[in-house]
Image (cartoon, rainbow, N blue to C red):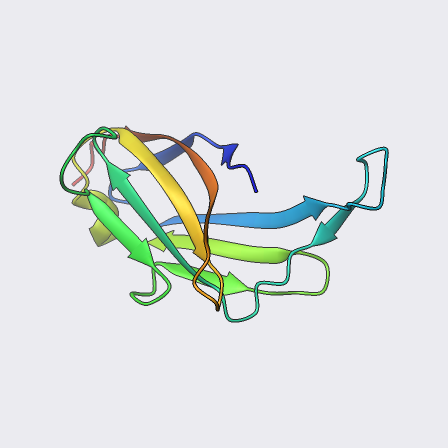
Length: 125
């Protein structure tokens, strides 16, 4: 799977939620217009926001283990929900970059999306 690009904007000091709907092309459709749901049963996920790709520390790390990401398999599409509380977004200090990885029950890691992470600074505090 090749990662898609999705540039996020986060408003500092607010509750942040994004839902990613994951489908993959049907290998039996030569036109490439049919997509199938991705079965995300027992998958885990992780995401980090860093100031730059080279930064040694993350501004924030979200995982299925810490409750920042929920992976929800459905019949139509696999859903990945990314969430940060208002307290978490208030603690962010700058724009950055991110990527979101899925981990299969067998331990195979795939990058799903990546991009810039723009922080819209809070005025009301």
